Amino acid sequence: MDISFAGKRALVTGAGKGIGRDTALALARCGAKVTAVTRTQADLNSLVQECASITPVCVDLADWGATEAALQDVGPIDLLVNNAACASLQPFLEVTPDQFDQSFNLNVKAVLHVSQIVARGMKARGSGGSIVNVSSQASQCALRDHTVYCASKGALDMLTKVMALELGPDQIRVNSVNPTVVMTDMGRLGWSDPEKAKTMLSRIPLGRFAEVEDVVNTILFLLSDKSNMTNGVTLLVDGGFLAC
Ligand code: NDP
Image (cartoon, rainbow, N blue to C red; front, side, top):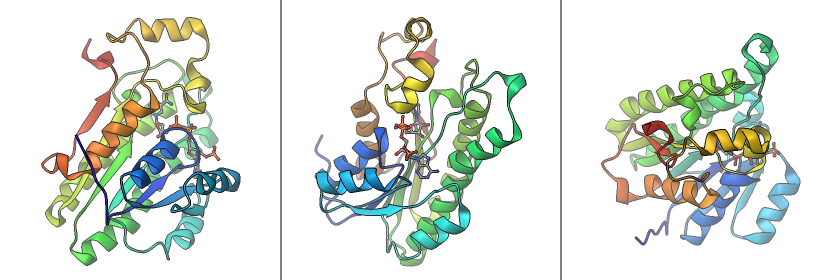
């Protein structure tokens, strides 16, 4: 399936590493004018070196005021990927207010904020658009030591659905992708212990973790007009983990 984003403007958060970085590069390869947002300047420098057409924006998305300022001149956006997130792992009884606030600030509140900024422009232009939130299988399945992460991704799934409901009449589609483990920096944090990995792998019918490319391809599909009638879904990229 050929997908072209020629003439489209895309914004990807958390584009410095992992899934976000490869999504930004894939969108640029498909012809989109990409704005890459992340908080580490060195990652943006290497991204622009790899793909000169990408516009870098360096900001900590957990900071509401800084985000407002950083995105005010970003211009019209047709495609948004809310990908930046953090995972802080600890047993339920040891979760602290700070860990909770940091995760919800980035994994939920920043998604709401960036989406408001972008969707206001889409609505004002009457041009429609597509938003993809990067959620997780953890939104729908309890994982040990993942209290805050699971809760934040569960909240993100509902945010996705309400956004789909309210923005749909303006032809702005909102969906999420919900991957299983991907061996990025974040994936390694939770799953590099071979015993833990074995337990998770044994519950995935396809018998492997997802590759970054598996997730990127699904994001591209949801952003594209190949999914024109798809709105408000949480699309699993989990090899069947949640089916059994
Ligand atoms: P990585 O940790 O590899 O990359 C995350 C990116 O987000 C980094 O560039 C990071 O920058 C950036 N980022 C983090 N915090 C902020 C912030 N406050 N402001 C701006 N940018 C920030 O993560 P993945 O690629 O693995 O994850 C991407 C998405 O996929 C996330 O939403 C995650 O929850 C989801 N996901 C991941 C899975 C996995 O196993 N990897 C499984 C299921 C879902 P920096 O490095 O500078 O902090």
